[in-house]
Image (cartoon, rainbow, N blue to C red; front, side, top):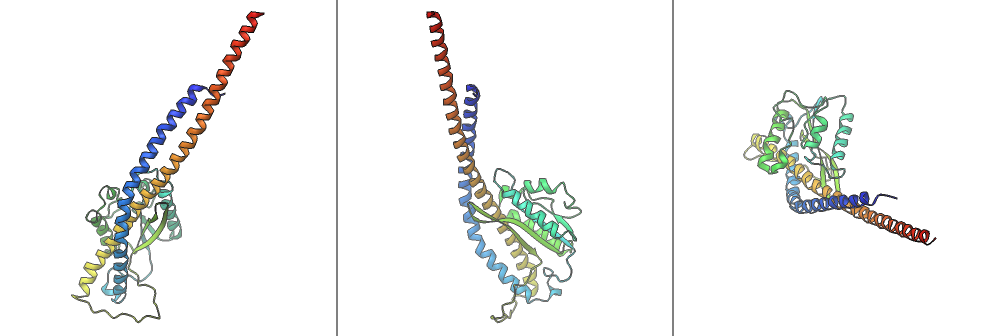
Length: 291
């Protein structure tokens, strides 16, 4: 029979844990609403801008477009986007797992990994894939502290400049795409080079007139689109993190409630057994005295 004091201490401990998980759930729920609104508003604009500039880029000669490249891919930059904190279920592990899958698929190429988020940084910083000799920061852990386009743009620009300088032939971002509070989809997206959409034989190919000119489109609008895509991925990841944490803390609270209920039943049984034992001892003693 378990000791009453030990069971009572466990009940108190589980109750304290339940208060923490419940509070974390409410905090994530409040942050999720703002993050969800931000990504829902950004997504249509980012997707349409990407579609337009991919079509425009396809109509520009590759020799004139430094963001479109042909030939064999020899070096790849992978940017996995995780979070700075845990307690979010499989949110971080799914991104790390998908990144390793991509690395294994591209093992014949030169691979560099620049993680965004402390959890991914802690994993890949100890591997051979961490960045060396580049102007790109080795991580983007501070981006989530103030997630604004102005704060994200310099990090995205460093990636764009490295690609334009031909340090990498391809840039891939890996992030959790937000679907709803309970579902996050690990997504692999090619940031660079820009690829033309698949040809649709039923549609007539558009003929573009560039105003003010091709150079402006390439040097201004395409980098702006890439910054927007990167910012959208961070917003998706941020909303997914809070959705995953809210779901995980909700399940943890439910489990703690069930555990506390079982412990109370165990405590009551042990207490009843203790009382019964004491009564039996008193009765036995009284009978012994009566001889």
